[in-house]
Image (cartoon, rainbow, N blue to C red; front, side, top):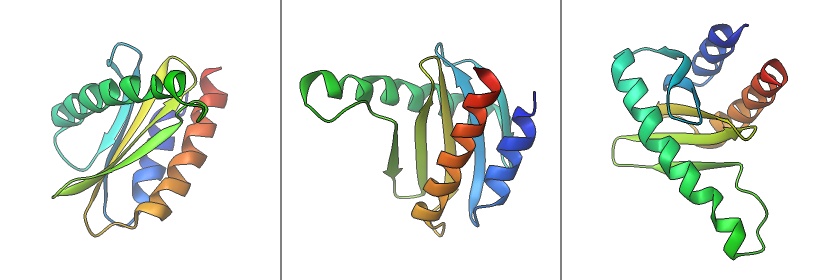
Length: 119
């Protein structure tokens, strides 16, 4: 499966992209690409995956529909975390100089390709 290639392309296509990881429903890494510490990327995926799981519960309380992804802005970085089907999460980290809307477009395209590969 071309997971590594898809994640590498995602990160490299976004100026300021640091890393991307595909994790399963338990937070375990399936595949990743990162310019930094691979272990740190795995920890990032596990933590942001929990946030995504909590956000998925929002549609049960409000008529917003299912949560697909979220963009998080911190003091040091942007993070996009999104669902790939019901069982996987895609997480991408970027520098503050990155363009989050460009990254979101690339993220969605990659999530669709990953979904096709998995399911």
